[in-house]
Image (cartoon, rainbow, N blue to C red; front, side, top):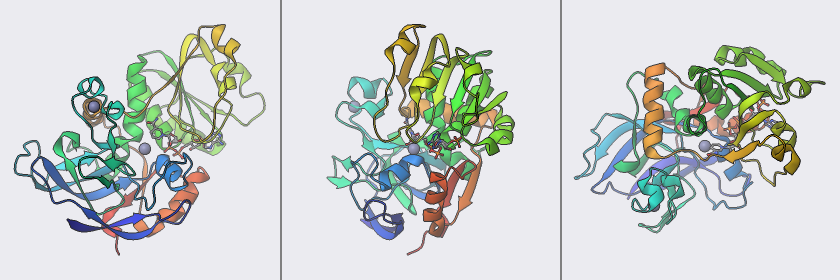
Length: 349
Ligand code: NAP
Ligand code: ZN
Ligand code: ZN
């Protein structure tokens, strides 16, 4: 075992503080990664706050990891020392069940091993995430980062990127489609970039009028400040696809009325609590509600390669590790343009 430095939280809502954690010695198929950057996803905040009531403490969050290969196991063939690589939301799965074979490892029948706060069945240990200086991962779950991409700005692609790219592809976002992105945060700003690059006409629905210029710069044609009087009525029946990235409880029933007939609203945001729908708003119009969870390894690599070709990256604010708690507070106030990324070189004991 090797000791590495990390930042984690010891109890629900407790501030994140330096910790020392252990990583296994690289096994035959493993890649040892020196972490350069790790994005801060709102799921990390939900986990530290125990919003989903399933967090095990201490927790070391982080699943938007970019780093350099430090060493490889004796039988690992896909990467070499020095390669720019990435790790996303999961680090293992059974590999043989229908979902694993179909490239949907996150839905592994035996249960995927997620990058943090998950149980590693093989080693009977809990996983710790990317707010750390190093990680050891089986090469099957390691992604290759195109050399043209800035590593700090690429880190958020590993969760926010795949989580928004995947539903746009699944639900057939195509040139000329009218797509609404609800919530302009880490996920939302990448959804706008992807949807615009796929040729659709993007409208951003946001609670923050101050984000209007950014929305247009990111590629949106229209911006709607949803708290302002009369904002919703003109949008009724307008959209082929809605991608909802909102992290807090909000009125999904009203949002569904913005779909045209046969339109689909995809939920990727995971607010705590229960969401309600009025059946008639869905029935009259054959409107559809769907969910989408991250993406598998092949699709994540496809997304990274697409970003390599199209130059899509996140807008980031790179922070020192001691500012993680301030970043969490600012994220909860919607004050981030548009992803905090931790510089792993600043993680110190
Ligand atoms: P984020 O950067 O904090 O962005 C969330 C955005 O939601 C905010 O910027 C804000 O946008 C909007 N919002 C916040 N509170 C709101 C409220 N009360 N009413 C309406 N809008 C509100 O978070 P993120 O990292 O993008 O994550 C978003 C959600 O997706 C989280 O719940 C996260 O856990 C979930 N998630 C899901 C997956 C998946 O696989 N499906 C993957 C990653 C994350 P405006 O200021 O523009 O209103
Ligand atoms: Zn995430
Ligand atoms: Zn499986």
